[in-house]
Length: 56
Length: 290
Image (cartoon, rainbow over all chains, first blue to last red; front, side):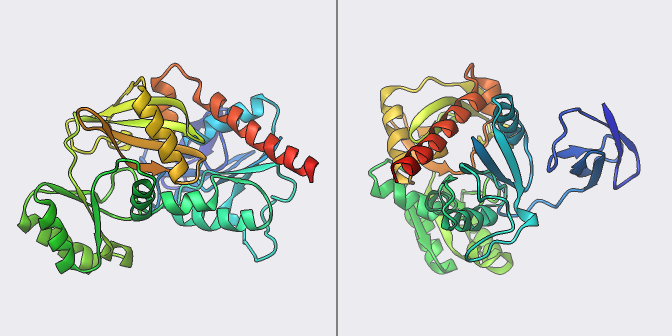
């Protein structure tokens, strides 16, 4: 288990070992959606807003 | 095999796929399309040595362009840009299904509020208005009255992107509170599930409850035909039960499968990777002949 800082509120997040660059995680403190920018060491940034053409 | 994954967001679906590919020892290159440029003859994306590229772009616009460019470099890509172009647009999707003789809900496209209202009135109420590009059940409207239709059409015409002025009007299909999602590889079903809800929208993304579903012969045939109609590939074919038969309302080209994987006994990522390995082998065999 590794840790990283929420880019929105600064809280410390516990991260899973199978973290992937490009994955989105939620901050348990402020609820922000965060994108994993790097995994070694873990870096989080605010995730992009939902776009109209997203989907399957 | 050397496999590239086009993405801009890693969902649980991509994590399942990545995990299966790595467990089998494949050489996986993740390609974040946001970080690259695609030129007429080459790209900054590391695709040259890849046996196959899988499009898992979350954004339809990126999926359409990235696959087209990568195919132009001679790198096999699934799904193909031709399949993506049909599946990304509900009007093209409906036309392809109808042209292939696949039963699909009656649909009309109109370009003005007035002609869209005529289309709506011709269907009667309720009927359905959908965006031509969109997913997860977003911006779908079940229209119960003329006054509701007038309001929705005015909002779309006034507030919307130009694509919202392509009015896609469809008959409302009375389904039994559920629809059917089939994941297929070149028309061969991997697994199927129902998505149930009290709401008229039953998408898993809208919270529809999922349950494994056994396809009968008719459904199997329709899935194969629907897949062929859009050019094949790794697809999510959506059917509705109409009492004594089925209607296929759409085929999805960057299909999500995490809900299906959790609902059925099938190891979905393993089956998908089996198929990808076969596709990559086809390419290797073709090169050996050449």
